[in-house]
Image 1 (cartoon, rainbow, N blue to C red):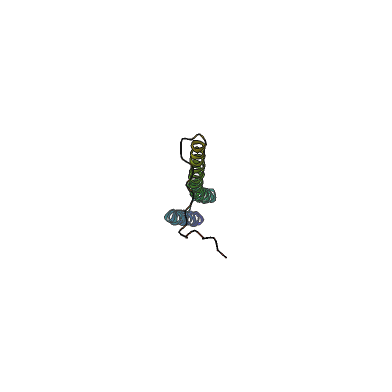
Image 2: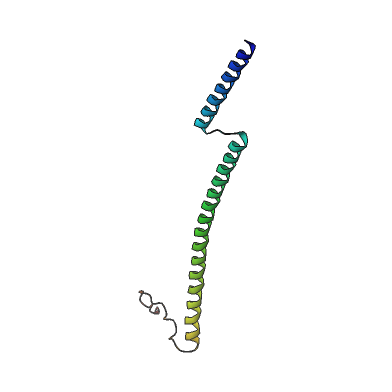
Length: 109
């Protein structure tokens, strides 16, 4: 009788362990190290995505600044070229700005 109870007890324990394993599998829990590893992977993925977004945003801003600097430098170069051509007589002097006001007549006494 004792042996029968021991066998029943072992059978019940095996069944409970089997049920518990099935339950854990349905939740995809696994052991602690597996859970922690998946959590680490998710954190690494999120950090990598955030870093990529920062890099893309920074590259966009850097590219715009570079374009602005190039355009500014180009304008300065073009102005210098025009000035050098004027100095060499290749271009006429800058026209004097005209006004629409009539010339003043000297006052007579």
